Image (cartoon, rainbow, N blue to C red):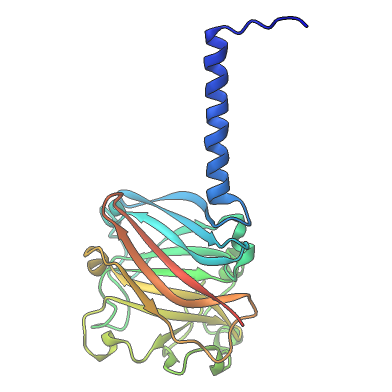
Length: 261
């Protein structure tokens, strides 16, 4: 057998390659491999002076348990102020694991001057739309059409929800609000949860959060009421969370998915 001579340079190079492969493999196992508890992520999107990035969390069986996005603290700064009432949309594509959920994409909409009704939501805030239809389908939503005004059965909403007056919003649909929300009773708006519909279907879930409230760096979980009828999907949001990590200066905002029985 021929004797193999290994130089220090070759040994060092080999160790670097092996180490890189090892850590890469661990990262894949911990974050991206179905069957292992982990997180898969979409691309980073610039927001203000920071970034936002979608994610989907899977359990050990590969089922989605959480969907949302992370947002750096700088994303609250230097946001655009143009538009009297218009919102600026930051589209957050979801990773391929979205097929394990009811959702297609997230639209993080910044409303620098808020929107109607005055005295309630006309403060700077984020509308965080978790859409169950594609962007192409959204583009076809127009107010005043029969499809836009066709409402889902009331059983698809918790009993305390009602549709807002007026026509559907273009590229969004009809909005449904929680009538028990504190801001509708005169309290300052902090956060609430909205449903959206189009053509007789629920098409989005929407946490709304005031910029001022997010700036306090909240850390909370808000339980959601369950509709009598849920979507034809394996899970529905049982709660939404807002977490802030002071060390990394990153928010985590997510829908916590409850598996249907």
